Amino acid sequence: MPVRAADIAGVAASGSEPPADCPLCPRLVAYREANEQAHPDYFNGAVPSFGEDDAALLIVGLAPGLHGANKTARPFTGDYAGDLLYATLARFGFSEGAYKAAPDDGLVLRGAMITNAVRCAPPQNKPVGAEIRACRPFLKARIEALPALRAILCLGRIAHDSTLAALGLKAKDAPFSHGAAHDAALAGGRRVRVFDSYHCSRYNTNTRRLTPEMFEDVFAGIRRHVDEG
Ligand code: URA
Image (cartoon, rainbow, N blue to C red; front, side):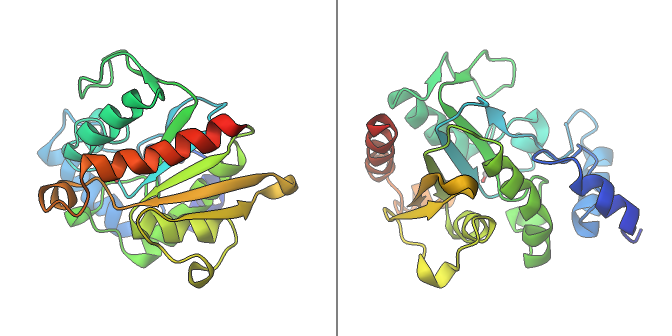
């Protein structure tokens, strides 16, 4: 079904969190509908951000995994990538409670929030450019709605490029590189530091492109920056 202008206007007005049945991306809507048939017990919707409204750290992932966040309705929850992410958040004091890969595990984030560049599960975990662009207003609004924000951790190049665009920066002025940090201005003159990491995906960790030690080094820099105040 084609997307109607009224749908776009209505959804855009929803700010930092799209409705679960967001209609903006026809391919992702078709995929959601197929998943509702195949997995009626899954959430199957635009996965909301998870964490504190006064977060100093925003983590930007790529998109919900079909059998993880798309099932549980919490970013990275039940996804392979969540094991390393949530373990590292705990180690650096950004969470309390035990992560048990379920939305009712009682885990809370402390001074942090997790979101995704694309909020709906894409086929093969690969959103296309139009989907990344369609979802960007939500990322931009998400960033703008965090008054205590000091650091953004981008997991992978797509999260990095979409975050830079949301901040009004050009990717060529701050190219993605694991371990890099780039300073940017937020509306109202506040500063935020954008940290880059390879995505903590199964592929990257199994091939040791990203080791737990490399990920912890990035988090150590974030912790220092956030604690500097
Ligand atoms: N799950 C998410 O929510 N985001 C990712 O980027 C990967 C898995």
